[in-house]
Image 1 (cartoon, rainbow, N blue to C red):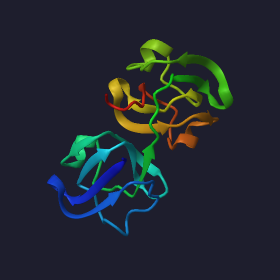
Image 2 (cartoon, one colour):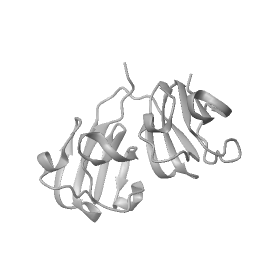
Image 3 (cartoon, rainbow, N blue to C red):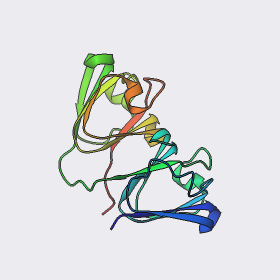
Length: 175
């Protein structure tokens, strides 16, 4: 069963909030978040309400402080459970908006988009199968952007302010 617990203080201390479904507004439950326990399922936590702001992939495990989930601060305001998925993965990325320009189809993780795609610009994309996480820098570092199946005509549709990215990986549950 999916379950995530948000704690106001480091090392699972202080006021906490347990969640087993998507939550678009958590501020009334906890004022800050300095540690997280994921007891089941995979999740995306968001810095702002309504699934906006910085995004963080969280799999089953303990995160005793926000640096452990690559957090930029102690602010988590919403979360979304990622449905379990065991099928194929396929994504097509485009250099320009509206599915224009150079493009590439991927079915595997890509730690360095510049090396593989010869550009870091991804302005639109189509997630055909599976869930993906787009990263700001190579080797899965920096800001993260969760992508569910569907078409994204411009980078702002997945929450980014820039079309420049460094890596892309499949959102898979640990085995």
